[in-house]
Length: 383
Image (tube, rainbow, N blue to C red; front, side):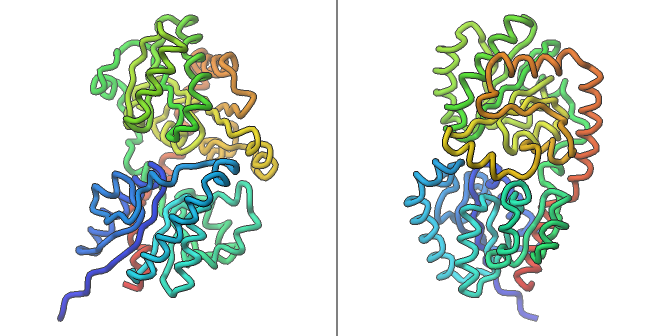
């Protein structure tokens, strides 16, 4: 019997979380189908895993209506270039990973050329644009869901959807070892530690970092034993962070890390985080958190009117209740952030209840996600 021909799959990921998902998917694909070739738009993790990069995920890092509109000509050219390259290569399938505002349009154009399409991480239209669900089939032949309630919603709208679990839930332990993690990071064993994580995008830092620093400064003044641990997404954000700390809290002397969000969250007692994937990381690390987010003054009122659910933070959406505080837009002040953090520090029963809920949700999200996603992609390829 002759060997099967090498399989080619296009992957398009944006941002750090999608890059991690893509790298894990690539490793699972290689285990299921040795010799598989992946190419497309890749971040550093995917490139390290062997993805042939037609473009870099770092080119796709905008959020909010105003930001997207300002970047539209560049994004349009990027998408057109990717469509042309993918159609010319004729892969067995295209897998768009998250960033639906970019990827669904890309998938729709590629699908029109007879190439199978899979969208990994369902678009959160159940939160703010449910009417778009009916049109998803024009872009994606199949959706891979990482949240357990999504298949029922999308299947009801006629889109084949498979729950694969969340890779973060697989990679993070159900029982985090805070003491060992503190030792590995060189953090004090007995101090109360506050993780401060102002977002993975540069504009998130610009909008949130001053208030986050002022909050940390206020907390340190009120609780001298508390130490702040700042963590940014990548090394390029260290210089802006250092400048902001020097200007806003020269006496703070925090611990500073980059690209080690899981470890920092595991080590800390409580976290102050920007809304996004990091909120799920904090949940899976069993770390109580306060969530904040600020869009441009033009984008926020438009998006706020479109949102159809009561919460924006993933822990609250998964729990179906206000599990953690959310502060949005003008509600974000150093005083309000400080008060919300202190509630976690001063209420041990509330902290214990949060840990119990986080472990239950963690177990629900586990399921060998990368392997299940890889098998679903290969099934879509017809192999």
